[in-house]
Amino acid sequence: MSGPGHRMTSNNKKSQSVSLRQRILSLPTLLSFGVAAAFIVVLATQFDLDWSATWGNIRSMNPWLYLLALLLYYMSFVFRGMRWRLLALNALDTDEDRAKVPSALQCSQVIVIGWFVNAVVWLRLGDAYRALAFSEDAKNTFSWSLGTVLAERVLDMATVAVVIFFSVLVLTATSDLAVSQYIIVMAFVMAFGVIAIILSMRLYGSKVAQFLPGRLEGAYTRFQQGTLGGFKSQMPYMLILGLAGWLLEMARLYFVVQALGLDIGLALIPVVALGHAILSTVPTPGGVGAVEPGMTGLLLLSLDRSNAVSVAIMDRSITYVSVIIIGGLIFLLRHAMRIRSSRKETTVAS
Image 1: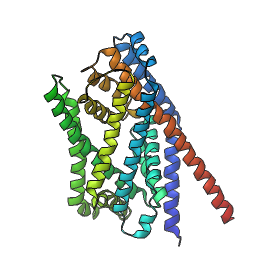
Image 2: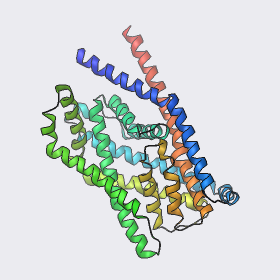
Image 3: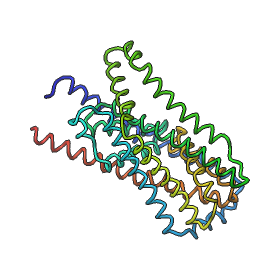
Image 4: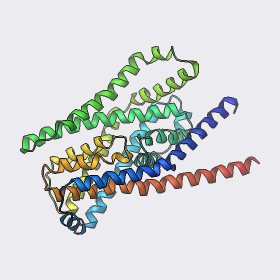
């Protein structure tokens, strides 16, 4: 049964969707590519590099190991999609609502689209777009969907903090390499930050909601349901799925290094891979300008400058360039299918 409230919600979602699409395809977005290119040029000119040696490494790369790294990277999205779906199912109260939650594969596709949006716009708006797309697919509210995204981020940051802490312990115990304390501090600051938000929401959320206007109170309540409800059950399984996703990220970097015929030691792989993930949260498109020098700096612990830059370039060709290409295709296909479906509904209604 539809009414004015339903039409208002539908119109709000459409206006939010149009606004985000306009941001993605706007002039500032196109300019962001220019800024990203400028970052790369500055970094390239500041490094004292033997570019002939760097490109020689890249040209001699093993293409099959590189393709394996690419495959493993996109397999990680499947595990992330499975975990996100479980979080969403936990955050719903009725079987009718749970039946509307998209499949794990659809959730994975929406995550890839969110990463694509993060790669082309500033301020990591991909998370907002991902929440909007998921709310449309699950036929639920944007605030509830955004809560499930936050819950997923909490699990990610907690996992990253623990894994990077033990990785640094192993690295320092098995070698004389000194890892920058910045990566460790940032991992724990981010993890404790999101956990503090969750605890505050659980302890004081209902009290805060009482002081909000009626409309905001309802939106906050749904946001809290999406965030806290995701942790109701199956936590060990969700932690395993999240860890599997991060292990595949590490495997991606390992095979990129192997494809270039280099060796950085197994203990450094998780530190560099997770350091890459932390630096990518910088609110430039795709973390450009932060990931590249940070990743190169970590690789310099084990490689010379030309080899470190070779690894950084080829790894970013997967985590940045391929996301723009593959994520962009999925994004366009999704909207083409939605336009087609909308036209069919209009034809049937008329």
